Image 1 (tube, rainbow over the protein chains, first blue to last red):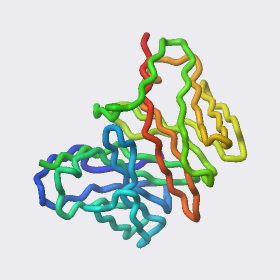
Image 2: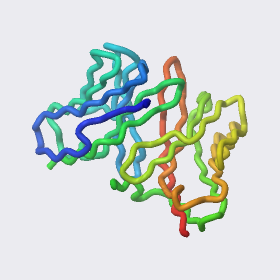
Image 3: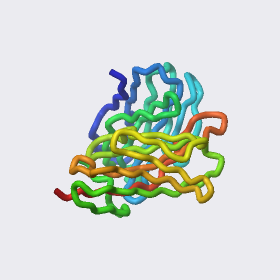
Image 4: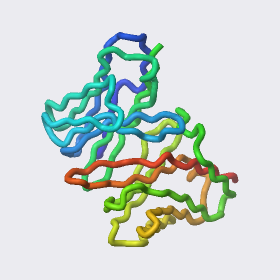
Length: 110
Length: 113
Protein backbone atom coordinates (compact mmCIF):
# COMPACT_ATOMS: atom_id res chain seq x y z
CA UNK A 1 0.00 0.00 0.00
CA UNK A 2 1.33 3.43 -0.98
CA UNK A 3 1.77 5.53 2.11
CA UNK A 4 3.57 8.32 3.88
CA UNK A 5 4.29 7.77 7.56
CA UNK A 6 5.20 10.31 10.19
CA UNK A 7 6.38 9.94 13.75
CA UNK A 8 5.52 10.93 16.34
CA UNK A 9 1.85 11.75 15.80
CA UNK A 10 1.71 13.89 18.92
CA UNK A 11 4.52 15.66 20.74
CA UNK A 12 4.58 18.10 23.64
CA UNK A 13 7.95 19.65 24.34
CA UNK A 14 9.57 22.67 25.95
CA UNK A 15 11.22 25.67 24.37
CA UNK A 16 14.75 25.01 23.21
CA UNK A 17 14.73 21.22 23.34
CA UNK A 18 15.81 19.86 19.97
CA UNK A 19 13.42 17.50 18.25
CA UNK A 20 13.07 15.57 15.02
CA UNK A 21 9.90 14.53 13.23
CA UNK A 22 10.48 11.64 10.89
CA UNK A 23 8.81 11.11 7.52
CA UNK A 24 9.04 8.10 5.28
CA UNK A 25 7.44 7.18 1.95
CA UNK A 26 7.35 3.85 0.13
CA UNK A 27 6.54 5.11 -3.38
CA UNK A 28 10.10 5.87 -4.53
CA UNK A 29 9.14 9.50 -5.11
CA UNK A 30 11.92 11.97 -5.68
CA UNK A 31 10.03 14.98 -4.40
CA UNK A 32 9.09 15.38 -0.74
CA UNK A 33 7.90 18.34 1.24
CA UNK A 34 6.97 19.54 4.73
CA UNK A 35 3.97 21.75 5.48
CA UNK A 36 2.61 23.31 8.60
CA UNK A 37 -1.07 23.94 9.06
CA UNK A 38 -2.46 26.67 11.25
CA UNK A 39 -6.06 27.85 11.67
CA UNK A 40 -6.97 30.40 9.03
CA UNK A 41 -3.63 30.09 7.25
CA UNK A 42 -4.07 26.82 5.41
CA UNK A 43 -1.07 24.68 4.48
CA UNK A 44 2.24 26.50 4.21
CA UNK A 45 5.34 24.90 2.81
CA UNK A 46 8.37 24.78 5.11
CA UNK A 47 11.00 22.93 3.08
CA UNK A 48 11.04 20.66 0.10
CA UNK A 49 13.44 18.24 -1.48
CA UNK A 50 13.68 17.41 -5.15
CA UNK A 51 15.95 14.43 -4.62
CA UNK A 52 18.57 12.96 -2.33
CA UNK A 53 20.88 15.67 -0.98
CA UNK A 54 18.81 18.38 -2.72
CA UNK A 55 16.72 20.54 -0.41
CA UNK A 56 15.39 24.08 -0.55
CA UNK A 57 13.37 26.53 1.48
CA UNK A 58 9.64 26.88 1.11
CA UNK A 59 7.53 29.78 2.28
CA UNK A 60 8.14 29.52 6.05
CA UNK A 61 11.58 27.90 6.64
CA UNK A 62 12.74 29.94 9.66
CA UNK A 63 13.47 27.75 12.68
CA UNK A 64 13.51 24.47 10.74
CA UNK A 65 16.07 22.22 9.13
CA UNK A 66 15.70 19.17 6.94
CA UNK A 67 17.92 16.48 5.51
CA UNK A 68 17.55 14.02 2.64
CA UNK A 69 20.21 11.36 2.90
CA UNK A 70 18.10 8.69 1.25
CA UNK A 71 15.12 8.86 -1.05
CA UNK A 72 12.50 7.41 1.27
CA UNK A 73 13.19 9.58 4.37
CA UNK A 74 12.84 13.31 4.89
CA UNK A 75 13.09 14.28 8.58
CA UNK A 76 12.13 17.71 9.89
CA UNK A 77 14.44 19.08 12.56
CA UNK A 78 13.70 21.83 15.06
CA UNK A 79 17.03 22.73 16.65
CA UNK A 80 15.54 25.09 19.24
CA UNK A 81 11.75 24.94 19.19
CA UNK A 82 9.75 27.98 20.18
CA UNK A 83 6.04 28.36 21.04
CA UNK A 84 5.28 29.89 17.62
CA UNK A 85 6.18 26.52 16.12
CA UNK A 86 3.21 24.95 17.82
CA UNK A 87 1.30 23.63 14.84
CA UNK A 88 0.10 20.64 12.87
CA UNK A 89 2.77 19.34 10.54
CA UNK A 90 2.34 17.29 7.37
CA UNK A 91 4.89 15.52 5.28
CA UNK A 92 4.02 15.02 1.63
CA UNK A 93 5.48 13.00 -1.19
CA UNK A 94 4.81 13.99 -4.78
CA UNK A 95 4.45 11.56 -7.62
CA UNK A 96 2.92 12.34 -10.98
CA UNK A 97 2.23 15.89 -9.75
CA UNK A 98 -0.08 14.54 -7.08
CA UNK A 99 0.73 14.93 -3.40
CA UNK A 100 0.34 12.10 -0.91
CA UNK A 101 0.19 13.25 2.67
CA UNK A 102 1.14 11.69 5.94
CA UNK A 103 -1.30 11.58 8.87
CA UNK A 104 0.13 14.66 10.55
CA UNK A 105 2.14 15.46 13.67
CA UNK A 106 0.60 17.70 16.30
CA UNK A 107 3.45 19.60 17.99
CA UNK A 108 2.99 21.73 21.08
CA UNK A 109 5.90 23.81 22.35
CA UNK A 110 5.48 25.25 25.82
CA UNK B 1 -9.45 14.63 15.99
CA UNK B 2 -7.53 17.81 15.27
CA UNK B 3 -9.50 20.85 14.23
CA UNK B 4 -8.19 22.66 11.21
CA UNK B 5 -11.44 24.44 10.42
CA UNK B 6 -11.22 27.49 12.65
CA UNK B 7 -11.81 30.77 10.81
CA UNK B 8 -12.50 28.99 7.52
CA UNK B 9 -15.29 29.85 5.10
CA UNK B 10 -18.04 27.35 5.77
CA UNK B 11 -20.64 25.85 3.48
CA UNK B 12 -23.59 24.19 5.19
CA UNK B 13 -25.84 21.92 3.15
CA UNK B 14 -28.49 19.28 3.69
CA UNK B 15 -27.85 15.66 2.86
CA UNK B 16 -28.78 15.02 -0.75
CA UNK B 17 -28.13 18.58 -1.91
CA UNK B 18 -25.44 19.40 -4.44
CA UNK B 19 -22.47 21.34 -3.07
CA UNK B 20 -20.25 23.80 -4.87
CA UNK B 21 -16.94 24.85 -3.35
CA UNK B 22 -15.03 27.66 -4.99
CA UNK B 23 -11.38 28.57 -5.15
CA UNK B 24 -9.45 31.42 -6.71
CA UNK B 25 -5.87 30.70 -7.67
CA UNK B 26 -3.10 33.18 -8.03
CA UNK B 27 -0.68 32.15 -10.73
CA UNK B 28 -1.76 32.24 -14.36
CA UNK B 29 1.22 30.01 -15.18
CA UNK B 30 -0.09 27.15 -13.06
CA UNK B 31 -0.87 24.18 -15.24
CA UNK B 32 -2.26 21.61 -12.85
CA UNK B 33 -4.86 21.84 -10.12
CA UNK B 34 -5.94 19.44 -7.43
CA UNK B 35 -8.73 19.25 -4.91
CA UNK B 36 -7.99 17.70 -1.55
CA UNK B 37 -10.33 16.62 1.23
CA UNK B 38 -9.17 16.76 4.82
CA UNK B 39 -11.19 15.05 7.50
CA UNK B 40 -10.69 15.87 11.14
CA UNK B 41 -7.48 14.32 12.45
CA UNK B 42 -6.21 13.22 9.06
CA UNK B 43 -3.94 14.42 6.33
CA UNK B 44 -5.29 15.82 3.05
CA UNK B 45 -6.49 13.19 0.61
CA UNK B 46 -6.60 13.52 -3.16
CA UNK B 47 -10.08 13.88 -4.66
CA UNK B 48 -9.72 14.96 -8.28
CA UNK B 49 -7.34 16.87 -10.50
CA UNK B 50 -7.47 18.85 -13.74
CA UNK B 51 -4.87 20.13 -16.16
CA UNK B 52 -4.95 23.62 -17.59
CA UNK B 53 -5.79 22.36 -21.08
CA UNK B 54 -9.18 21.21 -19.79
CA UNK B 55 -12.13 23.14 -18.39
CA UNK B 56 -14.07 20.29 -16.85
CA UNK B 57 -13.37 16.88 -15.39
CA UNK B 58 -15.73 14.44 -13.76
CA UNK B 59 -15.18 11.76 -11.19
CA UNK B 60 -17.48 9.73 -9.05
CA UNK B 61 -20.01 12.26 -7.65
CA UNK B 62 -17.48 15.06 -8.10
CA UNK B 63 -16.84 17.50 -10.93
CA UNK B 64 -14.09 20.07 -11.16
CA UNK B 65 -14.51 23.16 -13.32
CA UNK B 66 -11.64 25.39 -14.35
CA UNK B 67 -12.02 28.94 -15.65
CA UNK B 68 -8.59 30.16 -16.62
CA UNK B 69 -9.86 33.55 -17.73
CA UNK B 70 -10.76 34.53 -14.18
CA UNK B 71 -8.40 32.07 -12.45
CA UNK B 72 -11.22 30.24 -10.75
CA UNK B 73 -11.65 26.62 -9.81
CA UNK B 74 -14.73 24.93 -8.41
CA UNK B 75 -15.56 21.53 -6.96
CA UNK B 76 -19.08 20.24 -7.34
CA UNK B 77 -20.23 17.36 -5.16
CA UNK B 78 -23.45 15.69 -6.22
CA UNK B 79 -25.91 14.27 -3.68
CA UNK B 80 -23.80 15.35 -0.72
CA UNK B 81 -23.56 12.87 2.14
CA UNK B 82 -22.67 13.33 5.82
CA UNK B 83 -19.38 11.56 5.09
CA UNK B 84 -18.47 14.43 2.77
CA UNK B 85 -18.19 16.76 5.78
CA UNK B 86 -14.57 17.93 5.80
CA UNK B 87 -12.29 20.79 4.87
CA UNK B 88 -11.64 21.06 1.14
CA UNK B 89 -8.51 22.60 -0.29
CA UNK B 90 -7.62 23.51 -3.81
CA UNK B 91 -3.96 23.35 -4.76
CA UNK B 92 -2.11 24.60 -7.78
CA UNK B 93 1.06 23.09 -9.16
CA UNK B 94 3.10 25.87 -10.63
CA UNK B 95 5.46 23.37 -12.18
CA UNK B 96 8.09 26.01 -12.72
CA UNK B 97 10.90 23.55 -13.40
CA UNK B 98 9.84 21.33 -10.50
CA UNK B 99 6.64 20.20 -8.90
CA UNK B 100 5.38 22.14 -5.94
CA UNK B 101 1.90 22.52 -4.55
CA UNK B 102 0.53 25.81 -3.28
CA UNK B 103 -2.67 25.50 -1.27
CA UNK B 104 -5.68 27.72 -0.85
CA UNK B 105 -6.98 28.50 2.65
CA UNK B 106 -9.69 25.84 2.51
CA UNK B 107 -13.46 25.66 2.87
CA UNK B 108 -15.27 23.68 5.50
CA UNK B 109 -18.24 21.68 4.24
CA UNK B 110 -20.85 20.72 6.83
CA UNK B 111 -23.52 18.24 5.77
CA UNK B 112 -26.62 17.87 7.92
CA UNK B 113 -28.61 14.61 7.84
